[in-house]
Image (cartoon, rainbow, N blue to C red; front, top):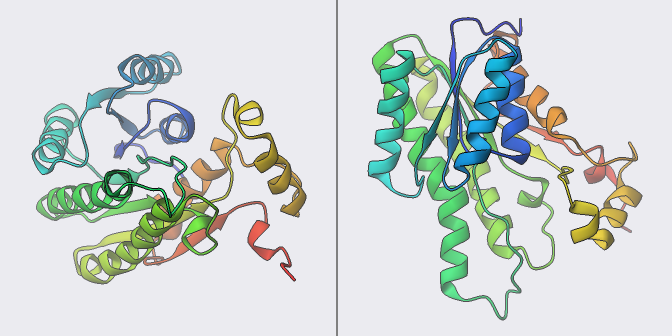
Length: 253
């Protein structure tokens, strides 16, 4: 069910962190992978080299996903290299901290653009390609548990991710007749190098609230995305799968 041989996955923001884990996991399922990056060229090339060392096929491509022309070029380059795009994982985004009362409009706009606008543009461009191919496809959007449970100093991020969730449902409703499934994965706090040092209080609060007692790993989210993109989820669309170690079940009163 998780054999993606012959299929091509475009994974945005896959030069590091969660995106890197996604790229490697999809390659392990025998998909050919487009490793997208905006600024992390060295990181993306390292991901490609790791995939190739494991016997997979991958290509690193750069694009500013907030710009329609660059998104179109990204899809065109992907198709020129691999011949098609069968899966899109909208992972790229920003998550800076900014208080609501002190946030500049430009800060708000940047986060909405990086998280919501980019997801719209990529979904639109890849869906058009999938329709032209005539064989359907799968799109998985990375949202966040903050789409329904906001965190302090993250109003812009929470709003953007809530928008991505509704975009997921709207796209699923429109694209289903073309055989294109659109789903979301809503992660909790995912480990990255230096996280405990950068945000020790947040890590400790999360661990205290998580029934499963640990932070998420990139592989936890990648496996959820792999399921939703695979034939095992062939009758699932417009859904959101929470991957948070149970934090949203935590009693708050």
